[in-house]
Length: 510
Image 1 (tube, rainbow, N blue to C red):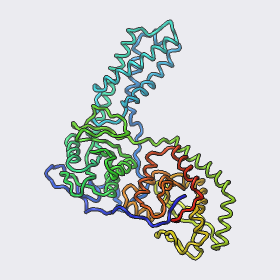
Image 2 (cartoon, rainbow, N blue to C red):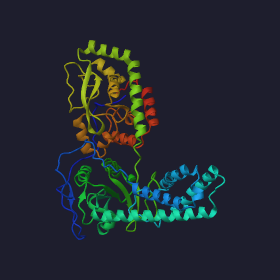
Image 3 (spheres, rainbow, N blue to C red):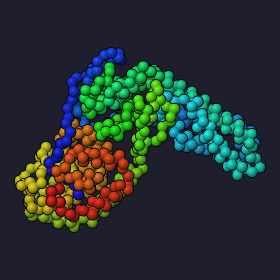
Image 4 (cartoon, helix red, strand yellow):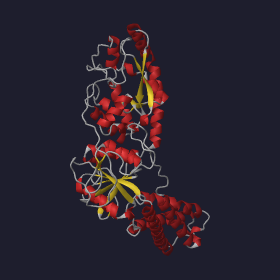
């Protein structure tokens, strides 16, 4: 099924740069590289590496609530201003009460509640007017069906559409003005992500135009090591960027090129998202188009640079709950079905290798929480499996029974109980020991992002042959791809592929 104890190929260097420095707005100052926070931390400083701790997610309750309130109020006022004979019918009240909800759906589909850096109610007027026309035409048709004797006339319909559009734009304009003033008073910390002069130009625009509500506190350099980005201090390693995000309470990340441009930039998207940051793409060349992203509003800009929000895939809590229910049910059924096989495995270990059938070891699970993983013991009774040493294929400490169990993956069967307990899932990134998690997180960018989802007995990396003496970097890339594209159907597909090869022997060990 899986492979946890084989030598790993370390394919990425790690390290940190020299000490940090304060942000200097003057354009003539030399670039400085920082390995710590750009500004003094707002709380007690923690310099130790938080490689597997749960990110401090920002709760963004009511992000679109002001605009929803303005739209609902405009709809209520429009309905109240219409001739009473049309909207005061006994069956008309539920229809009128549902209009704000219908308008919210229409505006949501049009992207009118998406975050923007430079919102403009007047530029939204065509979209608002079109949705207002749809809303009141539907309302007129429903009202006519409810009470045919008192339909909404053409003049009343035209009045409703025009009044609705005007009131919505007025309300949204007021909300935009309030947000701009709040941004001027309390600007949010932001990092600019990108290489070279393009990122420096975007940072300079943010610094010189405080009405956008973003205060640049540093530049995450994704270009060559000798790139010159002007006055901003540079954060050059994944760990430096993560530490700066935490210590400076960064809430926005502005990318200057599409995140899929390279693997390192893509890993930064996961880092910022896991820490609750809002992501933007400000393209200095005006040519970037995000594959798979929602279409941006063409009117949004950052001091002339085309800008759009990067909207990550929603968490889908209902499907995640369904995953947990399916895991528990299938694990219980598998335990019952595999009970005879597990009994034979336990008997073989006891007779062949002595007492101590079950092997327990600490592993790292969801959001860095440790748990005790269960397996059938595969090493001899007098052998000790270190928490800081890989067990290689053909290890002389492994008994013939243990070698058979590993090659057939039968040693993994006790982990079904970990699934029932909630420590693991059937499908997910394979858990590793804390020592190696800390080590790989500093060597391979994106490795710690694997802990965004429950660890599993099998995973996408394992069904693609990434077990044994294979690259840790490749495994992390497959695991993060699985998380980014997760679906229940993909879980079932991985389980089917795992089941088809469950009893196959692997020459390289397990």
